[in-house]
Length: 398
Image (cartoon, one colour):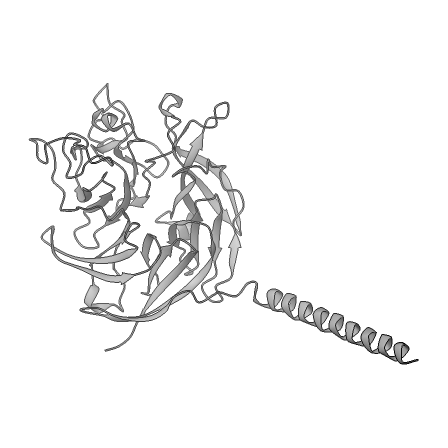
């Protein structure tokens, strides 16, 4: 009889444990469902710099490697993820929606879905430009940088048009140095860089697209005033050459000059001002060395080759840049914001008469900083990796 009561007590205890376990499981999954779309606050700090104080907050997360950003006229964010996903983030509720119809990309090495930019007249034509790693259908490991234009309709890309595609003979198995940013100048011309693809000597050859900045009309045709338009041996889209692996382009708000940043090797990251037809020297001149520490060249200067506005040695792994043209960081007006992958920093450069007169580290992210953009609200948005997320700076009145 006593054993019978013991059995009943044990059974009740087991049942209660199962009920408790079941309840905990329900609570856990309910928590996961409720919070699946919520943003984790990875970044929460107040930063004080020489001229501005600001709050840092996580704007949206849940990405792999966010690569490029652009804002629509309605303030919604369009974001490219190197894994091939293109996202739209609603400004009001921060809900992210995947955009369909993105070109197939080769996501390998440094390649994948790269930059994204809207047409200057997007409000009327809904054009979006996408820079990505293209591949040959019969030899998928052979890749090159391409640009496609498409119309954004709801959450779909339609009416695709190839804006830039290199000849198949330039595609290579090297999955490095694709370059890539897309900017439009005030006249509507489109500029984009292609890196040397790991074949440094091609940056000096005008009959290859590697290691160059290119300039096109918005429909992909060649402007008649491109510098090498009458050179039978040159690729007509070339605007400048001797550029190693540029991943930053920005146009100064007042001077309208085009500023470019490019990765050096071991040392020698550069900030340049681009001018039609100029040679920026790589690999004939550089402040960097091979990754092994051996010498690339003894020359940092040569006649007929441009000098950088500034170079970073050791390398900071410079990436996206943007001139601050918002209204609320008043003391940073027209300052250049520069990202660093290696040191995980954002720098502020004050430029006067095409010279850097002040350089300040304004934020250490603790994650690789891939891109920076001034938002339509005047806040500053950064694309960070590991974990992939977008943060923003909100000024605090001093």
